[in-house]
Image (cartoon, rainbow, N blue to C red; front, top):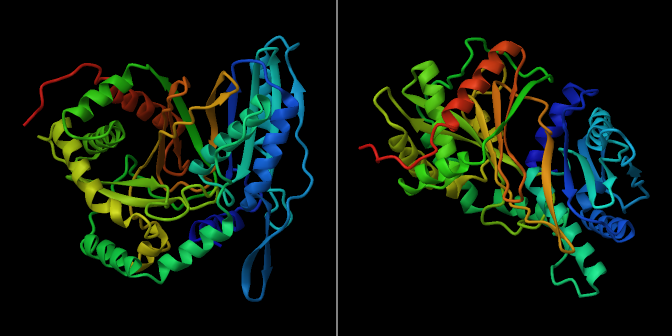
Length: 422
């Protein structure tokens, strides 16, 4: 398995009937859809994505994944256009399916469904266990389906190549672990955390993950993106780095810590041959952000930029290994506080000439130590959405709602260009 798969496997064994490792989204197509061509494109894509067809076998030597040929699977095509509220009916079906408990030793690891909401409006639902695909992989699957569909309905050859195999990803990871880059990454992180700061949290309670989550979400005004881009542009940053800085500033204001350590999910594909591999490779690296009471937003943004430049070449080194290196395994010891997952994957999907937009339903994370803050920001017309998952042993529902309100206020307060603070 990849190291990321191993982490998910261990987590699922701790809570074998927990469905929270199910990751899911739906993609709405604003136009008529040739359902036969869609079904064919989806089946070809699923066949290419061989990580979806593995099974896991446990014996005295441990656990091994076995790659099986694609088997038969069902694609329900459900017409809900006659329902009083087609969107609500489709979403209710999806929410029910999300509770399915996946047997990793027997499968299947995935499910799809296609909903007809109106003659010119469809929703494609995609659910996969997180051990098979990470968030970036969902974008690879969606784009490949659209490519194959468009090739079929237009009669033009498909110019895009096949998806990269699971074996290629396994080989690439094995090569990395034997490389001098792995040694350099290990040295970098061990030196960076030779004297680690305390991983502060928004809660005074500390608990190991429990396999349950409480979640709150909020749609943000579209002009929030303009504010983040303005803040970023003034400081040589990306808008995602501006969001990270504002979140660090929020944590500082609530804790008084002069250094905030955020968990930063990364694709785990930097500098590798797996850019088109739909597999589970995601890593979470610690991002140290210096901040104090006198620090303005611009200075925090510049600090994030500097930190990102330093850690970017070393993102493939697994956080699980770093925890072992630092002896932070077990108990309630943490490597970082809140995790901030900015999800800017630009699907840019069209089915024929009809635009499509994606909506995330579940990130597939069953274990959250503290907080997991997800910002869904896509350029396909989907609304900006802020979502917070929390360990219920650390946060009461009312506390989480309060943090969502206050973080929303901070993130949406930068809507005009401001003088740069010095």
